[in-house]
Image 1 (cartoon, helix red, strand yellow):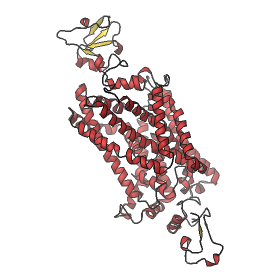
Image 2 (spheres, one colour):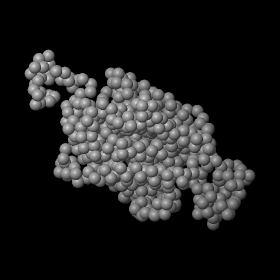
Image 3 (cartoon, one colour):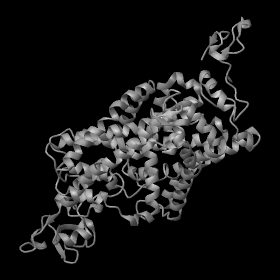
Image 4 (tube, one colour):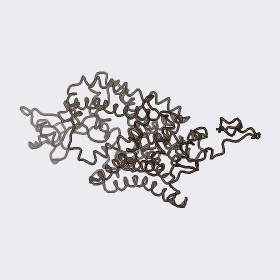
Length: 589
């Protein structure tokens, strides 16, 4: 929450995006470049997830969902393909459907093809299902549909075995970027209108899915698992790191998106009210969505005879395997599938809007001439992202996506958050920053709460609590770091590639700081606000003049010369300033 408010305040006060909002302390300009890189990297792979949702949506327009049963894309261990023998009257020798000899492995409880002992490809039937599932568990049709038909990952041995581009996925990936272009092509008002639908529709679908989930057998097991804490996991550093990255991502904190979008706010918008509504609304939505998800996991746990924690694997399994299979057990399953994937697309597109808007706003702030060609800028960025992301549409693309997901938005975000807090709390000046916020919100926020009531809490968070917690989580995760190298899909080079993505962000922050110090002639000058820092409009700078000059006597109300006196300046009134002075007749801003 403190980072969320900090970024809203910076963006709204300066009306600048992530590239140009650091004029209050130019030494931290590299944070903006880091945000730009992180948002660009995540935008590339995140749109691939939306592309998968489009693929499933198109596949749902049918009488029977294709992942409802094992198709020609399935393996011998697909749920419907594994015959479970009745031990009282059936044996392995009596069920030779392939014209080959089967043998029994009583220890593993399976019938296997001769010469293929301990190989999952050789399993032909379950002699004892309770034993066999521990050695060769059956896989859901939806799992094999995702692995073998949608992503092709079942035909790839890892990230270094990409294979060819899957044209269906490539077209869905292109469609996802076309949606982004249409939403962002004109102005922030266009995407704002789109969000009215994309932000509300998922709630309707979640409520419908929750009501249906409560009617499923075994749902109570899933909900019980969800609300029962496992305190032993608190000692797992990866859990803390994943939790921190997830909340940062869900709130767009330290990604640059908040600064970019807040730069379009009215100067006197109540950003404290917005912060509390969005952050608490986000957390409550996450809790509610958890009940929805685990009601279905409980049902599948009962259906498959597995513990809840073994039903879904990590990664995209929950979204593209568990839910799709769950809806096949509902009446009119294609309708439920269509609703679910439309909801998924609207949720994903919301996040993608913010990521791409961060990149676009940053570029237009850095190169103002691009503002006249926003459509061209949006199309160029999306085309570049599409071309860079084509590797994600290959058979091994899901492994590349996993590397990008693990490293591009992990430690980089925590690193950025720490430097943001330092820049405001210890360099710019915490009391000056709080006065800037008070100037925008007034003496009260949320219509009735006095600003001073929480003033010192924010000060404590920005100066101590937030940066310390972020640093502790980051160091804790480093101590327990194992990497992605598992000797199978990933090797040491996958980790090196991932660390390269992380280090690019850190190098931007540190390298830009060194450059600014050299350019300004010293650290002190590099930390000092430049003459343009402050509100973008002169009338708002005039409001800020009184409290700002208590901290910086060299504050200039009109550094750009946008206000000019009339030729008849003999009528200037000595006791009035700016627009209140009748001598100023040519106000361009």
